[in-house]
Image 1 (cartoon, rainbow over the protein chains, first blue to last red):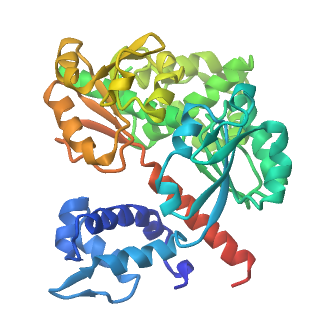
Image 2 (cartoon, rainbow over the protein chains, first blue to last red; image 1 turned 30 degrees about the horizontal axis):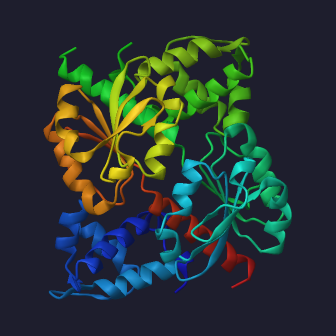
Length: 215
Length: 215
């Protein structure tokens, strides 16, 4: 199925559909109507019908969607049936949390290496993957055809490390460092800026408190 | 300054302005023009002028913005000058990473407690904050006027724990569990769905590979 026929707006919503369909599968649900899915996802049923129509007519009137089929098809569009080799740079708490994150494997992401500057971590393994020192990073990335680098390092080092990765063949960065990377346009960057998420929370709480104090 | 006069679209962009202005401050920049900021942030200069005009005329023609003033004012709107007490539920790697996250303190977030089900963690401290067992959570939240709960627990427990927090006075949840919480409308929920972020990355890499294989 050619993914480029599907609009970007739909693509952005697909991970959420995928997550909900996965939860339905886990709880043994085989079929679901757009109305039922609408209630769970808090999206209108017509939005759901419109979105899922993109994948051909596998919602039958009065019969609902085949959960497993839809889950599998959306997974294919998201590329979750393909394998992507990745490394994590920064083996602190966050790096270790991500290394232990089981969903990676289900999504086709294969952890090949962890890197850190702390010599006390050298040689330790997490889920069977060795923690290496930064001076090995360049050769490792080249020799192992690493596609993705996950950055869980301080922002002061992030740009330099991202450039090293990209210069050695990495195509995509999952960036947890609190800075923007300014990489070439053809490099895929998915930012997780936790500090911005925290500030949105702060803003909303402040507004909540103002409203409840009747200011 | 009354924050409710500012549009939601501007509000959503504020954390990013705040981050950039913070970086400028750290590197000793006192004034910056909208053109210069535009280049760094990859936002148009007119967008920047329009956004920052919301905070009154402190951009002077030919003289630029006072970085520190703007940083402080935006911080106030985001409520970063106020204190918010929070607890982290789930003291695994991710919970510990967040507990060690220094930006919390700079943003007015005060960590009061960490909770887990693992008895081996009981009594350990992280940055001086004790890890407690889950059966203490309810009373602790009530007695300490906790405003925010950070959930870094498996999705199977997330809804139950979120309800317990909300029933005991918590106003906001920073949710890292891979599920939606369906809390009352007046509760603030800021989701960080890492698995969805990962799927967007996967989709973009798959598309990248298709394009480069000339399919």
